[in-house]
Image (cartoon, rainbow, N blue to C red; front, side):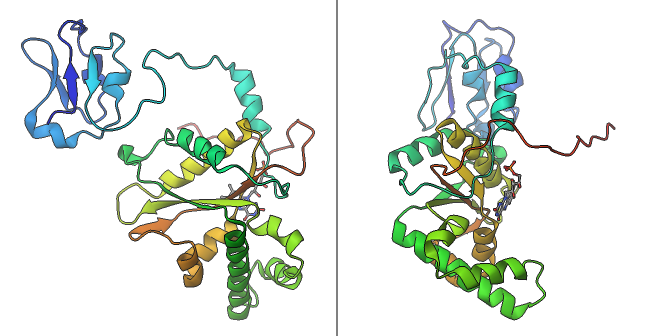
Length: 276
Ligand SMILES: Cc1cc2nc3c(=O)[nH]c(=O)nc-3n(C[C@H](O)[C@H](O)[C@H](O)COP(=O)(O)O)c2cc1C
């Protein structure tokens, strides 16, 4: 079945915004000048919804499943470029969090926005694992330390062995260490194994998440320990319940911030650009 329906009364035969906008070029105009998808191309549709989203006359509707979070006539909130720049530049990695737990509904609300981060060929195949239950958080943190122990045993000259040994030594001091490892909530998006172009998709989603979370007053930090432990340590993969056929991409720890920055932004290296 065709994924689009066109209203002949509303279509202005504008000459084909929908035809040009389709990223897989499956929409064409026939003699009646109405856009159509040829039968043999119907299964090539990636369900991105651009044909519907860019038709300014609301003449084209998509038939595939999904919800609309906004009305098609919504205009993007008027954020000035300087405001957006400031918002992005003042995001900081926060490594210490208040004890106050995050509400599940709020986490879901933030992830719901992230459904709109770009995904390779609109695959939308990111699966999220949220470690939120306090006991599970502690188990994941403990397993991270177990993994560090195996690392320093295997490779005493590991570039991070000083850091790992420090964490292993202080691990009994849970109240202090939980911030560093997973407290209070960790998030890890997974990507489908073997599917082309999927690897960066969950990382992009996480980068979006950090910014959306900041909008809600939630702080975060990328968690390299958990990422590597998920990749290299089978007990961690088991504990995280990574779905069959999926690969862990990265992890992020987030919660209410314990610390606040001045509001400005620290120094950074100058831009490095090569124009070609
Ligand atoms: C891919 C990636 C991995 C990171 N891994 C860790 C990590 O394992 N532990 C940590 O404390 N911070 C981690 N960070 C945070 C960086 O240290 C941080 O982004 C950087 O110091 C700049 O600080 P800012 O984010 O506040 O601007 C990571 C960041 C990225 C993008």
